[in-house]
Image 1 (cartoon, one colour):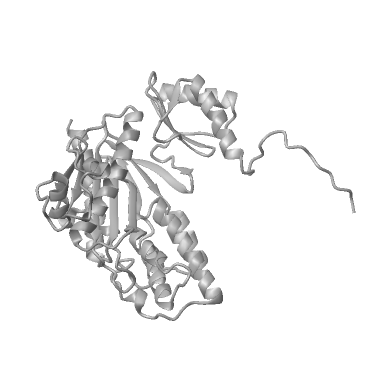
Image 2: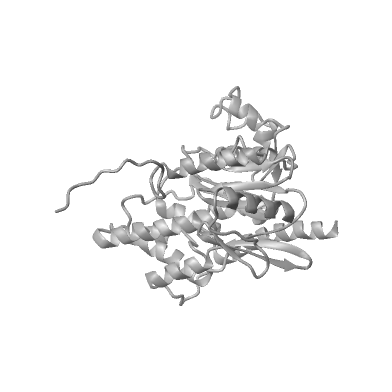
Length: 392
């Protein structure tokens, strides 16, 4: 029965809608006084040309890469001016939590390796949902049959459960578990009308995670920056669901998978070559954006950017060796986007064998041994970079 009391909000409170932007503006102003300049490609990345420090923000979390003396000074000054909950190094035996994942380090053969994983979160999620392992599952979606095995629509609580589980899987697929990205994308095709077949396929993904909760993003600490971009497509690989093809793109920096795409293409392709060109264009877009951010961060970025593809038609199109192919008429060759795709100073399409095209995992339902081979190939890329660093 007390009377209403109204207060004027004098500053942003934690949790209010404008809090992240206000905090960003305040932090940006402070960083400017310390010589940090934001990247023009990504406003949450900052670099200091004088000290060589690089910094990234995620709301009120900060990651800093710098020499020890610079690091110590930075955290002391920001704590004095803005206040910190705490900070620390990522070192062997000293893991840290950051943005819902575990960040750790270990030394292998004289090289420092960093890794990011969500193993603990995945195990907790599976335990809450009642999935504790059991039968061994080597692939999250080994074929297209399971999704279409039962067209009965889910309703009520089952429909809500499907949406909830898919949302959780989407989170893991976006953050660290690129090995389930294609499966989750396929499940998403059912939209708001999930079926019992879709639930069966979803439960298989959960079982796969229960058998393989330990997957991590890993890279060695080396000099320089090596960027690998892979592109792939699957021409109308799911005709029961749609005639549109699927695009897969994988971007690795120093052997760590940093960005991946598994999504349906916007239009139906009349040939595998057209589908591959669509995928190549997406790889070029994301690859160039990565390169541009690297340039903003004062990294040694190399041009032209190699795009690894396993389709000869995509290479022929990029290198303009067969203009009168069946692709003629599907693309306006005068368009700026097509000219950029063929700019040999910017892009170089390179042939890679299908068994080594890591983007293949984002476009097809694959059997367990193939999944294992592609995961091993990604690890081999990182180990090769580590060996080169150690040898130099």
